[in-house]
Image 1 (cartoon, rainbow, N blue to C red):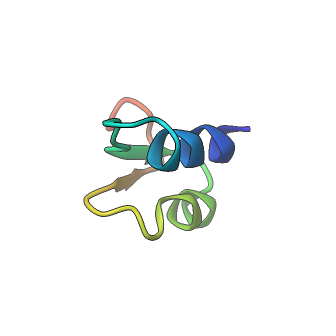
Image 2 (cartoon, rainbow, N blue to C red):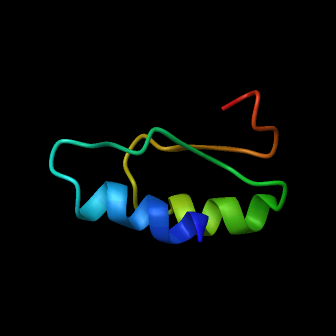
Length: 48
């Protein structure tokens, strides 16, 4: 569900920007953030 939110924010909502993705699974977070310029990846939500 979170990956869909990221996609919608990045591609559907005009003027919105995804700055960070947080997930305890680092590989999943990297996959979701791939292709989003300037998006950082975190395994600790507080760090995001």
